[in-house]
Image 1 (cartoon, helix red, strand yellow):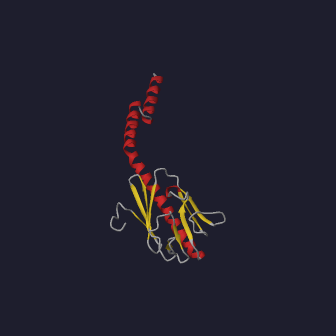
Image 2: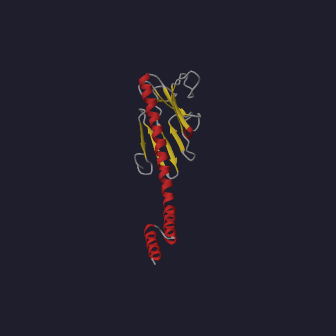
Image 3: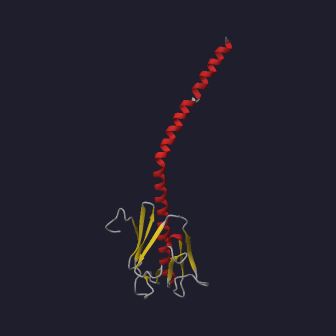
Length: 186
């Protein structure tokens, strides 16, 4: 009799500290449904953060090129890393021969690689023959047509449904806006 009472007490204690199989299956089912609902929103959040990070990195590179041009009192260029596509990355350097390519002996100030497969960066600048932005010693952007002819325009960065625009005004000052939200000033 004593063993039966002890057995009932142990089963009651076990019941208070654990889950039954049915309770566990219900919890797993609810968790799976919540995950299925939340994953698309989470992917969108990840895309938004990756786009923001890439936009900030390009914004920083523009400011760095401009600041280095002022500091050094000479031309500093920002060009795509591969010379063609901005979506692979960019490089800031002192372009001694004005060919928009880092050659041997030219000082490389900063390099940034982008490893986001679906990121699209579309440039639209006043001098669009070659992909570059150049700053002179006064910090103004200029084109290859001459140091007094400004290079202005923008990069449109897109990833999934998200977009940012990095605009360079005729003085060479950058700003970032969201074309989906700021339709009039972007």
